[in-house]
Image (cartoon, rainbow, N blue to C red):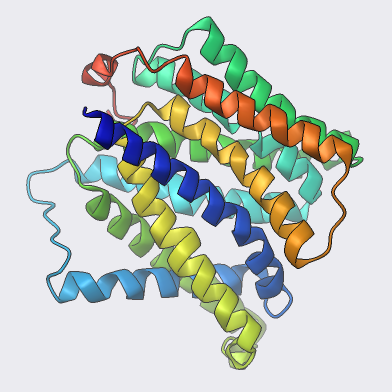
Length: 315
């Protein structure tokens, strides 16, 4: 890979973290007008319909002929299907702080899965850097009073499984990047989310006799803006970016960038919501950034030959 291609991958990885970091603000606005399932439905309606336009006009070329579609379906089942389903229902039985703590473990889970399925190797300094980044996130949540409540065991298990789902996506996307383009991966992922969450949301309204309320949130301007951001930027664009980055750099390196979203969300909360930033926020953010830089810097000399030995989850 050329230095230009590698540099672009890192720029996209940082951009991905920035978009996700701001998504927390828009999620709060969306959930103020609609429940989680309706929000997910409209989110993926927006993402799938927007991507379908360039596909139908021929500006984005898709070719699935002769390619392992079963493996691609496994990818879509992992993300967005399993990840958002497990996260949504996990947060019903656990706190958002517990969710943040458990999702922070994603880079560690990804590192382990990438080692097992992709034969990706990380050196000692990379491992320490990833752990440092994870500790930075945990430090922030713990200092904010966050902790794991054993009575929330059901929600905790679901949130932990959501971490495995997004880690599995990182590994599976890295494996499939040799056979599919980022657009081909993203279109199936968005389509899967569109069908699933629309059916679940509409089914819920039919069962409760509230179908008339399904479109009510669309009268709220803030909800529409939030859903467009979540659907187009935080779902479609991030999936395209992530799939591209995972075709260029190792899954463990990509995954650790997710912790930068915590830094971005803190900054966004301070700037747009007037939330207080304490010294422990600064310390935690510094640990996260140092960890992300270290995980990628110390592994830069390693080759990507291990990808040749990658094993798809569906095999």
